Image (tube, rainbow, N blue to C red; front, side):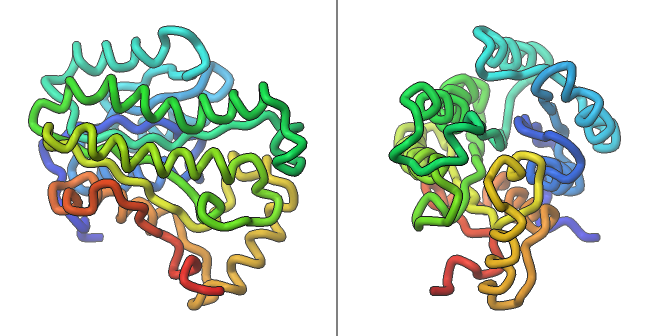
Length: 257
């Protein structure tokens, strides 16, 4: 398949691959197909066996542990990238977490601790990554994160992640403004519902998938490969004018009532 853009000579960091079926994996595949060199992270040793085959198939240069909850680990990732590469051209942030007991209840019932943890892992970590990535993007670059329609509208059973993703999308706008004079653009990819391991924590997610499919104009869910092609475009200089925007990758689901 002909790549949508040419990322030859560019280097990117992909944070959030859980396995071959994750959105981050689809994006990484598109980046690699377009010619980019990649560094990939894995959450912990338990997750590594699921991520390593994906990284090897992509021919990634660096495979690094990254749990944003562990003090110093995120900084260590960027230290390694800085040591091994002359620069960083793009970053994909595709991580989210909320304690199950807080996620599977109404927003008014979630705990302060659960809300704070979800916000830290799912939103503030992107701000931290932007701060660490900016000095490495000496020739400009692209910062991308993954959101969902539930940031803008109430989605049944999405609960706590709705306000968290809304905060993430707002952060993208402010990061884009903060870093504009450095030639760095920031984007939120609002991905359509995809059956991933991360999404399995949402109560009755299979029912949500059916509802989304029924409401999508084409009657078809978006694939991780399709989301990846949009991410590859945003990683290129051609995507720069879209900075600060929420880009919907959902086969038009967001346009329906």
